[in-house]
Length: 503
Image 1 (tube, rainbow, N blue to C red):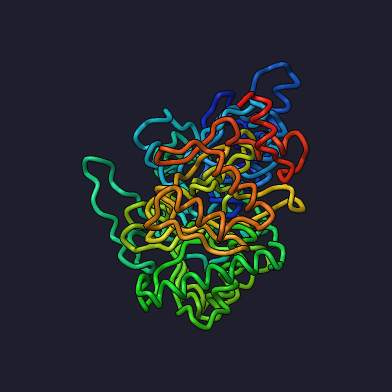
Image 2 (cartoon, rainbow, N blue to C red):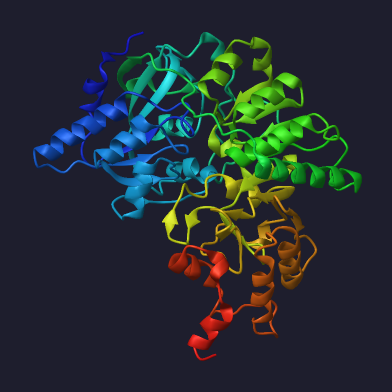
């Protein structure tokens, strides 16, 4: 290998104030683990010397603590896109200290190639290996890495010796042509390959290689399935089985997309233990520990993903079982989340919501309409193009003080036009073939918690009649204002609010 060997600190010296940086990976897997932290250390030195030092950071999705965490704590982030999940960066975004652009994950790569974000000064990429002619075997996620390698002026490579040789062949690297030369993406089944097992970089761009030996699978294990999440999973299974009985899902079943988190984990657990759901494929953006069990049991025949979001234990188990390697493929985010492929394959999408309103609109990113949690992520890519789009949430939170079913969401990520089904621990609300008032009745009766149903019915009764959608602007956000004032949505008193307003 003819590339210069650098320390992380030497590589970080290349990065200057105002640089735009692209990092590899998608969620924690596949992220660089040494150079970003060294850049953060440089930022601290620059700040101590009284000099400005901030960078713009682009990724596949969220990153790891050595990237978002260290750069945030060093006050070195100016702009961030398209997704994040660590408290440090989230707090700075909510404080207005970091500019954040929340984007559909499928769009970021092509928007960079189109020139919407200007130039990328440097890409920092974790790999298993690189050849002298620039062929790279990537790590445990792909994200936007292939495009970063293409558009970045310079590239810093981290070779992690903990990435096993057996990771070769687990990637399918395909970058679509840009308009007007774009063609169809040649994926017709979840297991189809469209591209190459390696990514490519112009060797002249490579500043140098940083050798690392960092553990894989830094994702925390999810909490065990509890009564609430188990019930959500059972309700999803019951719905899907009934769809098959009604002929709305073919007997061969359809590919599944599942978000990440405790609820998604519980749903996948329920699918594995169902006697009525046939073996299926997954076409998704992340696979977590529960998917490993599905692959081992044969309930999941194949998993197409962008990221192996496994815990360390699950990651080691996967690499110790080569018989599983033919059942998993990692793709770039713009392919794993591409609307064309999602629509063609007939994906059943399942994503979590912070809250849903009685008309079927979904808030998946902002608490009380203002405080960013993580972002829209890939949920919009799948929801808007799925064969059937399902949103999941518990009906209540915080010891019954919060209802996730509200009169009006405080922030809208997904409108009812894209939402087919809402599932809570209370049941399944099917919004298909219903007008807005029928949707409200369906959601109240089948998704809302019994404690909140009377209040939600009262809200409807106080809405002005005569329109397609019932709405009372004076009390539409009363659940949230009451929560802010008393800490308990159950204390909502619509009549008192209207009386105070003289209405």
